[in-house]
Amino acid sequence: MASTKDQAAEQDAALCEGLVRRICDDLGMFLDRPLAIESVQAARSVNKVAGERSVHIAFKFGVTIDGVAQHGAMLVPLADSISFACYLMMMTDEVVTSRRKEKELDRAQKDAMVEVCNLVGGSIDGALRDMFQKRVSARSEGCQGMRPGAAPAFERVSGVELIVCRAKVKLHSFPSFELLLMLPAIPTEPPSAP
Image (cartoon, rainbow, N blue to C red; front, side):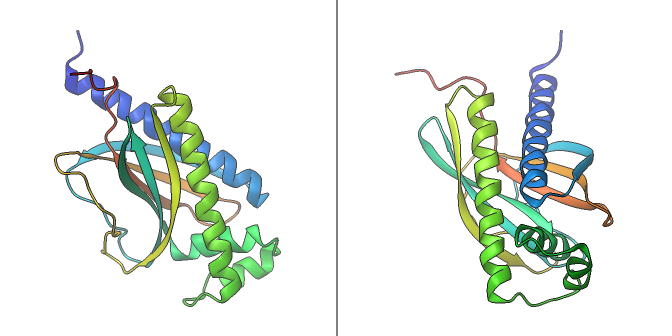
């Protein structure tokens, strides 16, 4: 018989796989470019995680679990976030390749980045509602640029662990990158009434 810890690890892995798959399928459709998953790992953490070695964009979202508002974020390296925004604006592969090297975003890229965040929030919402019989929902809460090693700013509910998904993802013909997804741990059953 599997231990409770093993069951939680299996549920976290299935949750991460489902969320990353939904995000990649939806974004790939909107960007009109394949967004392929190479691997997904799940772990629990008491701390927020940070993107390493490069600037990241945090696509932040709110998560409501059994009526309690909480928060999470998806971290994507800047170059890949720029690619998402550029493809959403229907730029060619050649333009996207040159824009990936930029360190500053223009107004149109910032607006497109917010739209990407809205798409990610919608994907997460749809997946969570499906997986948890509408007990859990999500909504987009904007973007935040992150220096290397910095964790995104969002409030945490005391005592609630984060589920951390680390996915290796490949957009179109560009090099693979690590997508980090953090969200509060979700109980399998709603709390019992007092």
